[in-house]
Image (cartoon, rainbow, N blue to C red; front, side, top):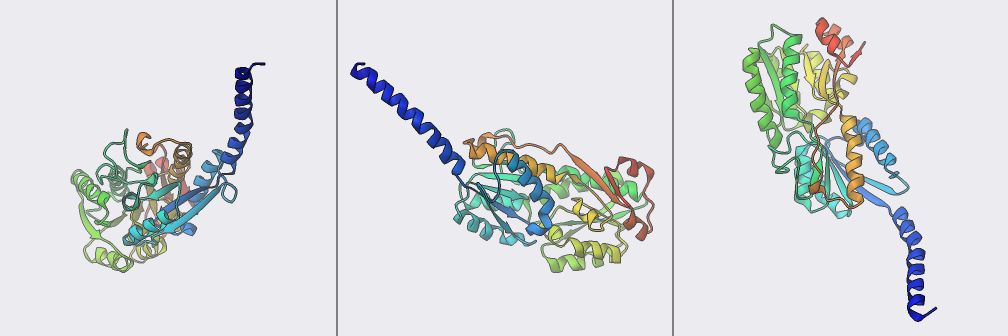
Length: 327
C-alpha cells in the first residue's frame, strides 16, 4: 500500500472511531430548560405532565438528560423581569414561557431561545412581527385569547339571556389585554350587553372586584386569562359563589376546582406540542425560523353542581355543546 492509500485508510479509521464517541457525547449531554410561569408548579401540574410526556417522547427525561428550572411569578407579573434574568443566569438551552408578559420578559433578558407554551396575542403585543416567520429568538404557540373572549361572552349570553351587564376582569398592564378589551366591546354591542371593566393588578384588588361588580349591577363575570386570576383560583371561585355571580373562566382548572363554566384552548395540548419546539431547537433549529402555531383543541366544561348552587338551569344547547359536564 502506498503512502497515500495508508493516509486515506487511517483517516477513515479515525472518523469511524470518532463517530461513536460523538454519539456518546450527544447522548450524555444534559439539557437545561428554564420555565417562566405565572403560577406555582403545584397549580400547573396537568400542563407540566403534558410537557414532560412530549419531551420524553422526543428522548428527554428529567433526572437523566434533562434539568428543568421552574420559576413562578405567583400571580405577580411585575416579578417576571427579575425571574427571567435569574433564569438566564442558569445558562438554559431554551426557556419556555406562559403568557405574553412572560414572553416579553424573557425576550428582554437575553438571546436564549424562547418557546411560548401559550401567548394571548404575540402580534398585537409585539412579541413577534410575523407568525409564519417570527425572526429573533422567539417561537411557540398562541392561545388566541382575544378571539376566545368574544366566544365566552356569547356563552354567557346564552346561559343568561336576560343579562344586561357583565363584569370583565383584565389586567390592563398586559399588552394582550388592550386588544382583548377592544374585541369584547365590539362583541358586546351585537349581544346587547354592557361591559364593566375591572382592571385587576394584584390580589387585594381581586378581592374587592366582585363586591364592586355586585354594587354596579353585574349579572355575570368574565374572568380573563390573567396571572392574578390564575394564581388566586380558589379566591375568585369562593367570591363568585358568595355573591351568586355566574362566572365563565379561561381554563378548565377553575371548573375542576368548583367554578361554573369555562371555554378555552386545551392547555395540556399546547404544552405537549411545545415539547416538539424544544426538541427541534436543541437539535439546531433557529427559533425565528419556526412558525408560531395556533391551537387545534378547545373545550367547554360545565359544573352542574355549581349551577345548582347558583340556582341556574343550564340550557340544553350548551349541555350538548359541552366537552365535559361535571355532575
